[in-house]
Amino acid sequence: MNNNERKALIEGLLFAVGEEGISKNKLIQIIDCTSRTLNELLASLYKDYESPGRGIKMMESNGTLHLTTKPEHAAYYDQLLNTKGSTRLSQASLEVLAIIAYRQPITRIEIDELRGVKSDRAVQTLVNRGLIEERGRKEAVGRPVLFGTSTAFLTYFGLSSIEELPPIEDFREDENVEDEADLFFENFSDEES
Image 1 (cartoon, helix red, strand yellow):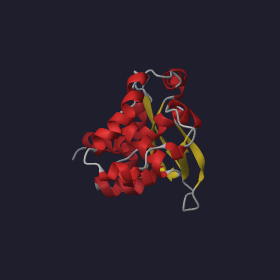
Image 2 (cartoon, helix red, strand yellow):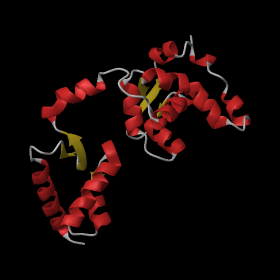
Image 3 (cartoon, one colour):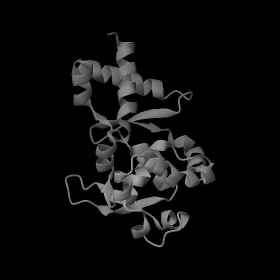
Image 4 (tube, one colour):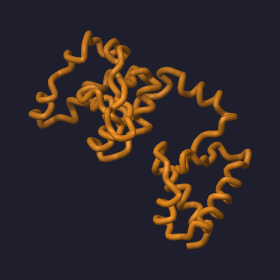
């Protein structure tokens, strides 16, 4: 593997790990290179990302590398994130919303384990839309954030409390669980578009 391929692999890995980031030691293991080679590759990537034609940059925080947006574009990101109803919720966001509604308070890692895939973008979308909110921190290593549904969630679905949600057992016994979930969120998705 040449250095350009290694740089592309590092970029892909940074994208795949999302906000969790990845340590240099883990990168050395994955791409099978020396510390010196990795530092040379990272220096080249940092230089690539400094170009005004790039919308992202690489940063290191507490020994972990991350991809992030450039601060000079912050006003545009704020405009996107603060535009309510500009896009429909994705299937992933709807799944995460249902998990949080029935399992709250719950951490993002616990959501990931239930779904079998990363949920950080879906969680961020739901926070930005005001449908979920932070409910404190779990007494565990790293003190992860606990999420729960918000008052806006209850208001939107016309619920006075979370206890008014249909019992989850009703969904488990039904052969058409996916159809039921789709019906539950169909109204929400249509009004968001």
